[in-house]
Image (cartoon, rainbow, N blue to C red; front, side):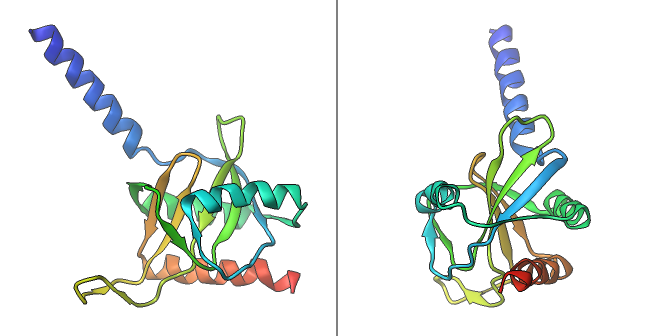
Length: 162
């Protein structure tokens, strides 16, 4: 009976460790110059990446400074499993290659939600979500300075293209 408990403890610990890990260092990030304002579901956003590639939508390579800031934001963010849902509007479609990975991850950076209420009428704190659709993980950002940076990042990416 003791070996079974030991086995379960090891499995549970490794599952928790894997779930709580933040992504490693980011080797590169590109952002697609697609600034549509309509919303997506998880599945439609995932397949939209294929459309962006097929249609050769312009790509913007993220600077080293911005990449470092995104890594820092991800490190401080609250991590949760992502479930199939609506992912909102004004998303940035990005591909990020993490150290040790041989393929890009499909990543959405949501627009900053300044004010919203839940179904019980309670006000939610301002937030943004970075969703790794490849790993099905949400990174919830609530720090005011990080939210301001994300808003500025979106404008910075869009500005030279318009």
